[in-house]
Length: 38
Image (cartoon, rainbow, N blue to C red; front, side):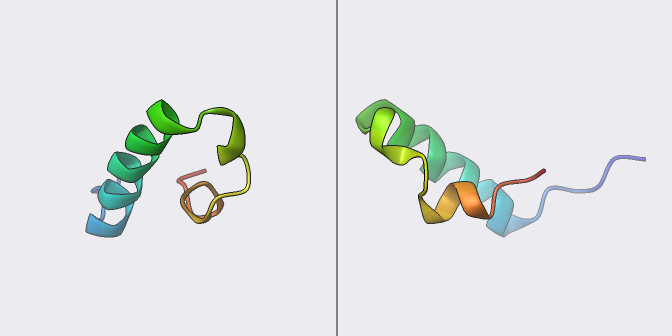
């Protein structure tokens, strides 16, 4: 059973992707990663 992706998760994913390109190294303890889907 796959859960529908919530809007917050989607937003986080996009932000993470954007940030990953900018600071891949200094993005380990960012807010987005804390709330990323487990």
